[in-house]
Structure formats: structure tokens, C-alpha cells
Amino acid sequence: MEAAHQTKTFQTIDELFRALQELKYICDRRLATTVFLALGMEKPLLLEGEPGVGKTEVAKVLAQALGRRLIRLQCYEGLDVSTAIYEWNFTKQILSIKMAEASHSLENLKSIFDEEYLIQRPLLEAIRSETLGRPVVLLIDELDRADEEFEAFLLEVLSDYQITVPEIGTLTARSKPVVVITSNRTRELHDAIKRRCLYHWIPYPSLEKEYAVITAKVPEIGKELAMKVCSLMQEIRGIDFFKRPGIAETLDWVRSLILLHRDHLDAETIEETLGCLFKVQEDQEKVESEKLAATWAGE
Image 1 (tube, rainbow, N blue to C red):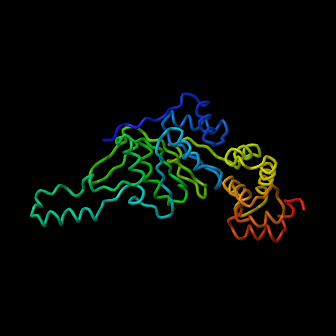
Image 2: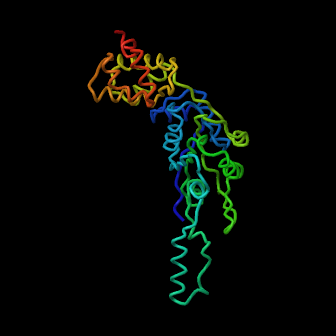
Image 3: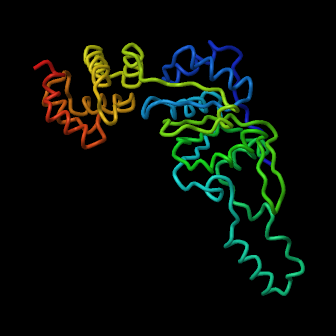
């Protein structure tokens, strides 16, 4: 067994709040409180919000702040047990049988359904992380993209932090891993999942918050340009686009402006960098057909 890995704990909300800020994650007091309570109550944290508002980033910076390894399960339609929880190493099993046959020692071959042949996927790896002395933060990302049936697989994990492998038995966590679940709310998650979590909705950032994030993440951006970008983002999100840009798109845009050595926004610059803001063809066409770039640039 590996030596136990020391992780950090937080005694107060303020201590956690400062730790997140030091890692350049700008959050409000309510989110910091919800994270603090989830840690203290050993409950999963469920974060919902529009794409690009920083849900996944919470898990990443929390893992850094706690000194834990991050395990990420990216959800998608068709996600199953063999991808999310475990599967058997069929190749190794067959090889063991053939080697035993070749040496005429089949009677001495131990069960091929032993932990030695078990391939751990993210959920099982997280459950067993404390046993191996390597506590983790488990990120179950975009759960709403998975089939509803997959949520049933999660219930045992989130209820008792254990996983049953029929050939071996029930594997139980020695202590609960930190769990962060994100959802873009493309569908409603099952109530049974929600009951086991503490919940927080992350909205699009306010002007002040977005400015703080931009200047923290991209300090080389000028203050005047940063404020202009953030003000424009507030205006853009008020328009009925198919996919409104989140703070992730704002960061991409700011970095593109720096790479292009632009210190102000004009219509040409906005049009040339639309790919940073809008990831849907119809939205880019809307900007072009309605000549929004010129309007936004004040031309």
C-alpha cells in the first residue's frame, strides 16, 4: 500500500474562499459556503448552469486547494458500467489460462475473477482511492448528457459510497471521496440524485465578477480593454443567440486580442474574432446579417 497522502482541510468559509481566490477562481460567498458545507457534511456537490460559466473549474481548483488528485468522468449518451465503473481485463485472463495450460498447472490457477484482473474505471478508482492512500476529488462532468439509466448506477455510489462487483463482492470506500457533479441542465436529473447532493446554480457572471476573473486570469490585458470586453459581454448575453457565450469564451476572446496585439475593439476586430465567442454558425450569421459588430464597436 502506498504511503498516506496528506491533504488540506478548511476550518472556515473565509479560509476556503481565500484558497480559491489564490488559485484565481473568483466566486461569490454563497458558492464558497455551499462548497464548504459539502466538504463538512461529506455530501456530493451538484453544480448546474449554462455551458462555460465555470462549473468544471470548481472541481479542478478544489482538487488543487485540497491537495488531492482529480479523477474525471466525462459523461455522454451511452455511458455504461464498463466505462464508468469497472471491467475485467479479458486479455490478461486468457493469457493466465493459456500459461497455466502450457505448464500443466491449471489446478493451481487462482480465480481469474480476482482483483488482479479488475480494471478500475473512474467511479471504482475514486471509491478505492482512500484504501490506496491517495484521496481524490471525483468530478462527474455533464451528468445530464448520460442516459437516465446511468443515474441508477450512481445511486449506490452516492448513497453508501460502495460498488458491488458480483464476482468479488462489495467494495466500500474507507472514507468518502469529495464528489462534484456538473450539469448543463439539458434535462432534469433524477430527484434521487439531487437528494444526495448540495446544490448550487452558477449563473452568467456579473460585470464586476467577469472583470475580476479576466484581470486575474489574463493580467496582461489592459484595464480599459478588459472593462470594454466585459461590458460588451453583458450586452451580448441579453440577445437571443442560440448559444450565448460564457466566461470561458470571454477568456478565449481576451487571449485572442492579446495575440493579435489589439488594444481596442472595432468592428473589424470583432468580426475577425467571432470564432472565439460564437460556436454555432447561425449565431455568427446573425451577427453578420444584423451588422452587430459595428453596433457593438459604436461605429
